[in-house]
Image (cartoon, rainbow, N blue to C red; front, side, top):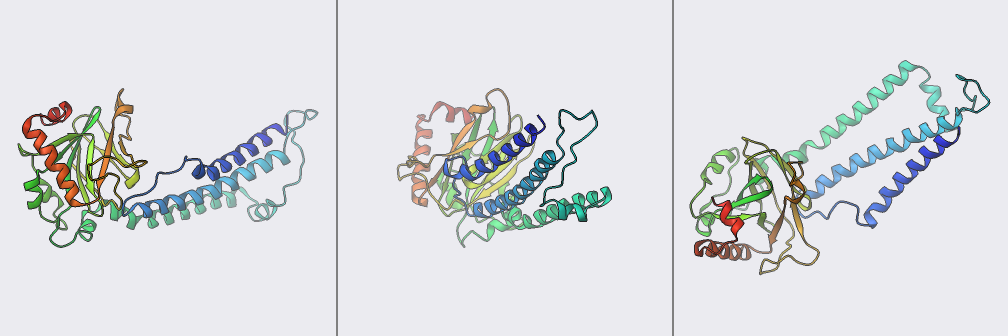
Length: 312
């Protein structure tokens, strides 16, 4: 029985490492990135994965080795341990960190240095994702981003767009003026309302005005590497720039390109069915054609029932 636990922990460590290695080949990994900032988010993920992976193997390896070297035996009395030799790869560490004081200093300073590095490494990426001033740099002169208002509620995403005429009038977002520009996008009687559909255009920034009508929800677009909590009483700007399209000219999703918008915060009994879709059009003309089609349905009273409810 003395060897059982060292075998168990050793097999567990090998199994975990094996699953990580196999995951990308069997579809258990992250979905493909399709936004301008997604590669930088992935780089941060891989840095953290490598650091934590190395220390997982190191600590588990030491644990298994010590459990093997100092395993108990049936013929020993309670309180006795097997007087085994330290494994070779541990001896250099044991010679340096040979007192509890030195060990505590090491396991305090090493994690602190790693956390400080990770904190500094993510600042620029976080700023590019969260600061509206960074968005302005990606908007060409004379153009404006795709703007929509996403209001979460149990258990759906209600989305509001400016109509075709107002879309052309909206100006480029100016640095440090994000709040005032959002106030210009106040509700109008002729706004376009849809449910569980966020529409965007390839290579064009998207600015989402996120809010919630009840509890906390989480706006999550895995393919865009976007995730933002919707908080009661708050209107939070969220932006991203798609670099790929996933629909044809008729607005139908291409095979293998279903980009979901799930709620990533447990929000009640129906949380599991709170899933929308992201539709990225190839050109602005395709987007405007879709918008005009929904406008026409809305004027004629032929919009889907849920879209009519969203307008109420």
